[in-house]
Length: 368
Image (cartoon, rainbow, N blue to C red; front, side):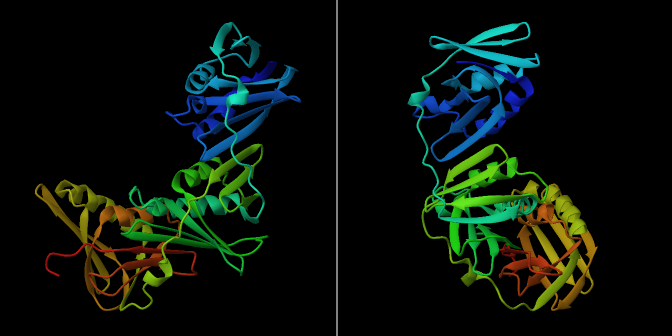
């Protein structure tokens, strides 16, 4: 095998596929980068057998071939090459690298020992713009549960409906995040659960433009293609929580509040609240004012925000992080906070439309 590639393109390709490479594996070969050179193209892939990322870059191929390179060493070494091109050439069980004045060699593993991940059958598909999918992931994935005893909540539920909507839901037992968007060329109804890690890597390779991409599903896997990059991942197996049954429908208090002001105030209150190791901040909605307070052994803080309240005044407390996680991903100027009392969930929705729905459980007040 002998080929030459652009150094920058090689580094970019490695950084893309290496996201699927495990740091430690019971199969040491998975800690490597699979490459195949042929037809003036270099194909690269990494896999942990649950997630696989593949990509291709142009190459001048003098002799076709394949190999598995030591992943971390290869990535770290090539990242420090300064020559414009790199030439690779196999020599028995090693691969010689030449870039400018730098010459190096890496021990390689025969490529036929690299496990092949299942090819995804096109049983269901849908199209969505990259920017919308990226936004939906950003605005839901923070609510995924990290509790290993509840593996099904370690993923995000994607529900494709008959009327061509995509509903994306994540919950962890204390909060719920839901995003809804219209989609195109959806081949029917389907519900899948995608692992947290997979969605994060999908988000990382998505651009912020409106170019459409196609999501392909089999009964067990998802496949996504963006340019020359392909991502394949296992889906989580099991039934997701019936979240519709826990969503509050009616409220006695409805408050319109500025997203930016609420975010800034909650951030200030959190500085004090985390000193008490509880992260609890108290919200007192009264008339046209929201009073936000937090106390610790080291001091206290009292902040005020102007609001528009319809219904009953209410005092309620939250984990400040849960409020901030929502405020940080929203792009709207203002939102509605809908509540009933100090022990039932607060629901955050847009002032117009139904693009998102956030439900946050309160912290019980000591005087409740």
